[in-house]
Length: 246
Length: 303
Image (cartoon, rainbow over all chains, first blue to last red; front, side, top):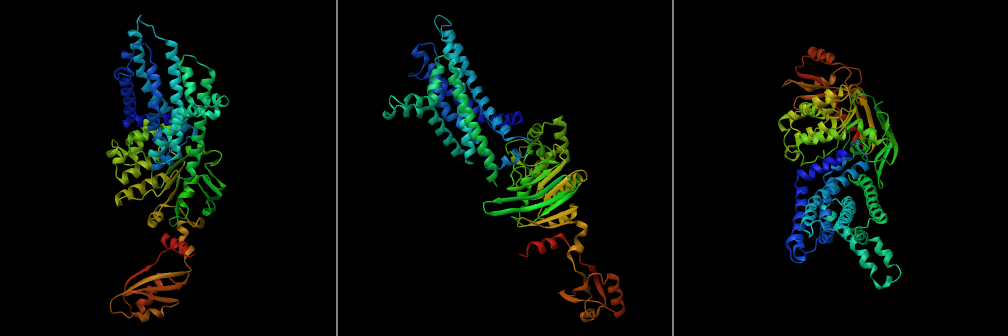
């Protein structure tokens, strides 16, 4: 698994994809937090990173599928999947290696935003007057959310040998799992009955509950099950893909 | 037995690709795997390398079952796939190092430079794989297949796309490896098979139609002995028809004839003495030998 992980990370940084993803994320984040008037912390004058945690899922919804789209599609397209799967690796080694490589890249993109936290910590009046609990909870929530998005992106990459299709499918699935349950639960049909259950199916409600600084084992469990579910499906698909990729 | 197939069977939908194939390969044998396009060569190789699961039947490589122990099989097997898929954006050196870490080898760097030397990749070792010509890519493919010093090497058309010099080098390389390892390779070039292999397997439409040692080939095929004769200009051919024991005389072209005798009844020297006695002047006289090509055509065109 480590060998696959290293190979993936090497290819991220060997082909500028990794740098590009990190840069794009940080530039957009920086603009929203410090430059654009509607969302700037400097205009809002409130010492918190709420905007970051509001906007980051939206960016990840596109950026993460863009990162994961090549994971399997490219291997299937170029036939290197045959090379990879005739090495002494199990299918799980391959799936998990790729999963953690993408996740590490996302974490690398998130790490520099800790500087924002430090900045706000110092800018606050009095210094240090920041809700650290909420910040830590939000970071954990964002991490788990990215983990879910990466798993979704990876699955869509196993479904097509075309990277564009994998990307669009990945974004769509991320959107469905992040937002759509919330909106569906608001339909009048479900009012007063199924609505809270349906809302709980989506990532949004669990993410929000974590960003309040309350780390509830149910939320963590929710994300871990989503990640496991998508990885298990990816594994099943990739074992099948090999049978027809001749 | 280093490779053993017992009624290995593969179907794609209704189409049978490999039909109950059974054979055994001893260790340190070089086996040529022949067959027309679509005969099931690649499918068999893919199944042996645990890429495709068989529909039924089983096979073992170095004693490990391909279905129940695929990771062990892959550890003992080097495989060069047909189209030799490689990561084009990787550097040769980087790619081989990555292979070494996938195989969890010790002294990775030393082994990689050893392989680079062995496959003649030294001048190209700092290029990206995508920049290499086909011949060099093929060498990278061979290098990755042999990197972990596997006991069994499966090469699917290893010499396709090589120039004549490279062909000779790669063949020598395969021959050298074959002294200690089991090599199964498929090829379309018959002379190559004849030059390299100890044993030939010919499959046609998924069935094994021939399995013989290279040196047994002539006797397997021929029910008759054929001598080719070229007469000096101006010599009349009708004299040849009186050759003792001759079954048939075919005219090839110009002064060239094929004298066909029943098996074991004639020899070159008896023809020569006959001609000398009758005053027939010969330009050339040689036995027509059976090639793998003959066998191949005979077995795979009749159906």
